[in-house]
Image 1 (cartoon, rainbow, N blue to C red):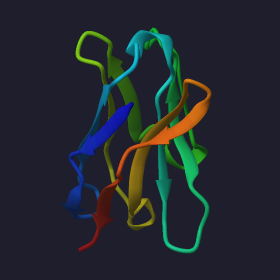
Image 2: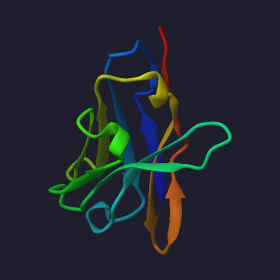
Image 3: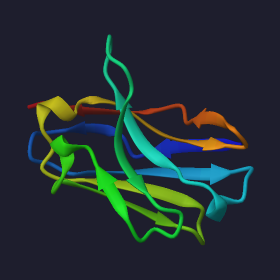
Image 4: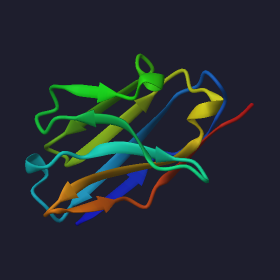
Length: 115
């Protein structure tokens, strides 16, 4: 199982970024892969979830209306489109899920919101 994030970087407040998570090693359509984030000294928090079919999503309250999660089952990828980024969105973002009965995570993508 591999989950590989890409697309992180430095962005000014109000800017946008899109993160991608490429999955391999498992039947992608059978599992949920979500987006999480973590800052130093805090626990990893769930940012966005999406169903296997990609038809229903849920969000952390603080990102509702600004972030959109999506998935492309043909490409085995999950995306996090982030708009109107704020200083508090600075974190390492991970895609992850319970696959074959255990937690799997990507290596993380740093998102820094700074002026």
